[in-house]
Structures are given as C-alpha cells and as structure tokens.
Image 1 (cartoon, rainbow, N blue to C red):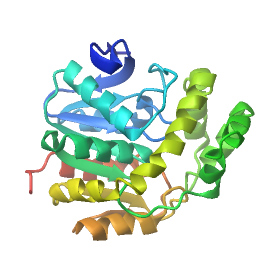
Image 2 (cartoon, rainbow, N blue to C red; image 1 turned 120 degrees about the horizontal axis):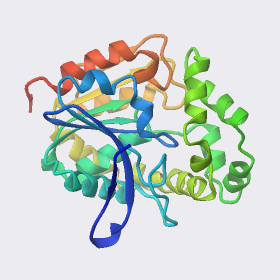
Image 3 (spheres, rainbow, N blue to C red; image 1 turned 60 degrees about the vertical axis):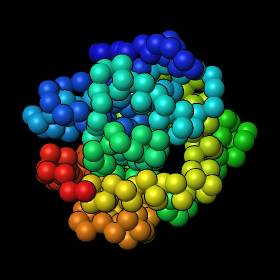
Length: 282
C-alpha cells in the first residue's frame, strides 16, 4: 500500500499510509475516530471513475505513524496539508466521516482557498452544539480511558461497533475489528485515540465562531449526509449544521446508523458523485 514520508518542519519524517485510485480532480476521504483508509472500500472504486481518490490513515490511526504527542484537529489538519502537498495536490474536494468531519472542517478553516467542496457524512461538525454519548464522555476521563482501553478485546470492539450500525452486518464488523487490530490497539494507538477524543472539545467551544464562518464561506458547496438512526452523532446535530449554514439539500437516510457510506453505500456513492463532480455553486 502507498506510504508518504513527510519532509521538513514539525512533521519531518512522519509516515502516512494511504489508498489511492483514479485520475483527475483530487478527492480526499477522511475517516473518523478509530477509523482507517480501507473503511472507504465500498466508495473508492465508484468515486475513482471520476477523479483521483485519496483515502488517508490519519496520524495515530491505521497503518500511519503514531508519535507520542498531543493529537488535535489542528495537528491532523496540518498533516493533511503536508500530505496533499507531498502528492502535488492543490485544490481538493473533502469527504469527512464522523470526527473526520471535524478534521475536514479544521482544514477548511486554515486553508479556505484550497477546499472546493466539502461532504460531511455522519459528521461531528465544530461550531454547532454536540453532546457526546456517555461512552465517549467516560473514555475522555483521564485514567478511566486508559484503564478501559487496556481491557479492550476483539469481542468488546465488535460490540461497540454493532451499536454504530442500524442493522449490523457480521462481515463488516469482522472487517473493522480485524484490520490492523494490533496496531490500532497498541499503547501508541490508544494514546492517540484518547488524546484526540479529549482535545476535540475545544473545537466545539472556543473555536466555534471560526468554524461557522469558514464553512459559511463555502456556501452551497457543503453536503450533509446523515442516517436517521445514528446513535453516535445524533440527527439533531446534523439538523443544526444544515440550518446554521443554510444548506438546501441535505440527505437524510432511513434505516441507517453511523456509517452511511457502508450501510447505504449505493445511495451515498450516487449523491457523492453528483455533489463532488457537479459544477461549483458558490
């Protein structure tokens, strides 16, 4: 699988794993908390018919390097920028899932001229109120998160993933659990996960106004896709994003939980293709 080693500055030497397919305008797929590039495997082949699709393992996740450091959306957005520059990508069309939506939004705040379009799938979007579930609130408690993380097994991981789907598919759950399980649950992987979970709260408080302003400048070049039965990021949050940004065409999906790109892959691929490759509507 492709790997990029960043050069220069604070990120010098950082190794980033990614999946790439297709040619044409660049589309970057950003996974959520605990996710990885291959979780987009149902979407990459379809989108690659129209453009150059890049699916990245963010630093600290999947097969990418996991340096011991604070993990913030600012750090991850910086890594995204360095990754795109290393591959010679200028302007980009972003797709962010779950907490990957927060990373994509942060990139839009810091690099507004480089984001052509932004698709937010079951996304946690800073600038709009979001109360995390009790699971994430518990994990964010110092000491408790480390204790629980050290007890994580494949079985517990599977149980946690099942609540993310409206109708869990055993094959999908197995794939998620087995993919780089040892690396993702290593001491470094757990530390990155907990660090990001704890630091992202600031994006929803002190940085809220900057996020709303940056996303507002994108106009109708923002798409919100959300499952009506999402128990991780509730529909109320997605509705606040749509109303706050004045978006005219959100996509609400019935019989769908927190992974629309998997649970309703055909529908999501169709709406992403229409949105990402249509004429700009600023």
